[in-house]
Length: 94
Image (cartoon, one colour):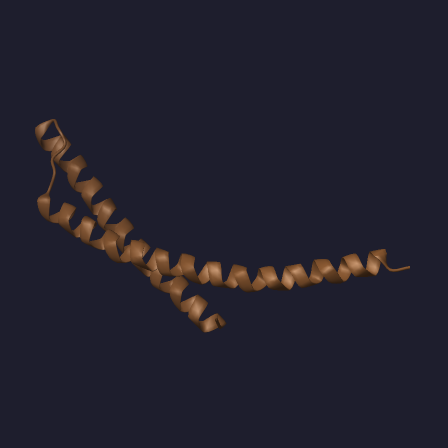
């Protein structure tokens, strides 16, 4: 796994996350406007559908990012284990 793949996965998730947050903010603004006009919050079906549709690719990107993190952590674990063994051997050898 190289740095470009890790960075690409991070940027993909972040872009989708920001897009979903923008749709959520739009929905909250709409509900606040409806509350001022009618006295109770309204729901716009179109915004809700877009929000739900935006969540799916964001969650998929987050799963991909988690898988990459697990691979990186696994490779680092082998490095950490080798380091611990080397340090232990240095400390116990007399």
